[in-house]
Amino acid sequence: MGAALVGFVLAAQAARADDDITIAVAGPMTGQLATIGDQFKQGAEAAVKAINAKGGVMGRQLKLSIEDDVCDPKQAVSVANRIVANGIKFIDGHACSGSSIPASAVYAESGVLMMSPASSNPIMTDDAAAKGWPTIMRLYTRDDAQGAFIGPWIAKKYAGKNVVILHDKSAYGQGVADAVRKTMNENGLKEVLYEGLNAGEKDYSALVTKLKGLKADVVYFGGYHPEAGLMLRQSDEQGFKYQLIMPDSIASPEFWQIAGPAGEGTMFVFPSDPQAKPEAKEAVENIKSGGFVPEGFTLFSYSVIQAFAQGIERAGTDDPMKVAEVLKNGEPIHTVVGDVIFDEKGDFKNAAYDINQWHDGKYAPIAQ
Image (cartoon, rainbow, N blue to C red; front, side):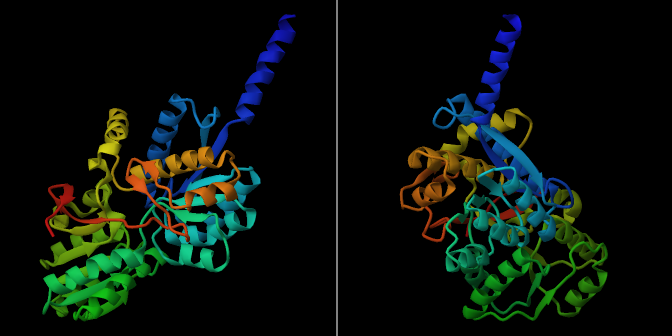
């Protein structure tokens, strides 16, 4: 009888485990951009803990599978194939647009639902819509929307100044730089230099010399914090100062760790700070109690888990196609970043932005 009872309990536990809803969290868990992956992981784990504590989703518990793509396109495709082979239907990721775009084809072909909390290149959802892929979404903003916000502001604030636009040749970096360049030009300001640099290099002294020769007043750089921090430090070593403006990628303490005091005054665009929203208060307190500050993409990753949970409940099923359909029906999803409405392409509608500025190792929004 004892053996039979143990067998019954183990079988019951296995049945419950099989009934869990697994969500893959895919991003750069290692490598230069591992801080972004950690933000994804921390946000997703906090959301799963909160949802499970309230009974889960339709009586089922959520669990996570953490996947590392190092923000590398080839590895992202391998990760996507592994996720699909493991029967996982929902993906919180990927981070870098250069990873999300090729991975999305794998997910679309398999009919599973991918929602990125960070990828901003419009190609991701534009191509998905053109190809009739309904399960590719993002709970984040688009480069063209960010460009429409900051490009005219740069044109007005720095009219008559020498503005340089740089990018790191990635789908994300060049995409956002091109969007800013377009709207800045349309508003009457032409850059004195538009150029790509090689990500991962350690010596940008030649570039700094070029910027000095152009007497650059402002540099807009579409890229990530490692290169931005090094450029600023090496510029400071040459005694050359300029206003650096970045997209959302430097909402990380690692930027200051690399740049040091040379990062003082650096500006960047980010969706209006979700940490300050009333909806986020409890989540922020819970995450901070574990010793992590929910900066950057943390609360967007949290919100993706909330969107999946609400979508499954509203659809009455974990069929990804039906979940995607209800998520795009115009009814708001209630998340820690506020109420989110998705358009027919699966994009986050009507996002608002802040211009943030780094000061003494911390950043905060500035008056526009």
